[in-house]
Image 1 (cartoon, rainbow, N blue to C red):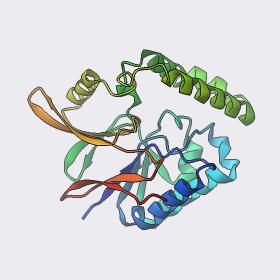
Image 2 (cartoon, rainbow, N blue to C red):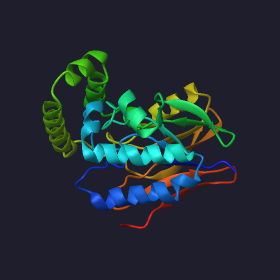
Image 3 (cartoon, rainbow, N blue to C red):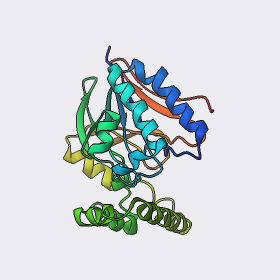
Length: 243
């Protein structure tokens, strides 16, 4: 029986060692028994470029994923808003297959659309403008041309700015937009949708043009960890014991 696991929004960093240990335990217990592990963005708190693989923490996380891939579990990765600078160096170090966003694939016989999910928050206009800027080839090239220390300082400044902006944004604007969800599912043939980003884990159903579509939202890894498991029999959301 084929088993696929899905995780998102781990935001791994050295200042959260208990969650890092929980992730490593998850890889060695649950993920190693699966056929595929899909990471749908924000694995790291931030990724400043593949040259940060020289840092012990990043190298350790990638090594743990590579060990999983070498054991036989396929590791598949869609970048999030925190780690969109992950590139071929990350892929080689982690053994991960880099997927485009969104990716439409077959999961246990059902057409399934995978994405991080931030593009669905279309009411947050300022964020979408920022996202288009930093995802451009010109911005990426200019940013990565700077020394690593300078990049990390800029990322920290952007993170602080983002936290301040969240205080004045409405909750609705930072969640997915129903019209954007419907448009996306319609354009891909009414598949099942799995995404993260919002940190509001749930199982939704949407009726679009007479088609009933499932939408699974993955949870974050702050208080604990969680994953979505799928096989030919069932889909189930699992919360790991708090560390």
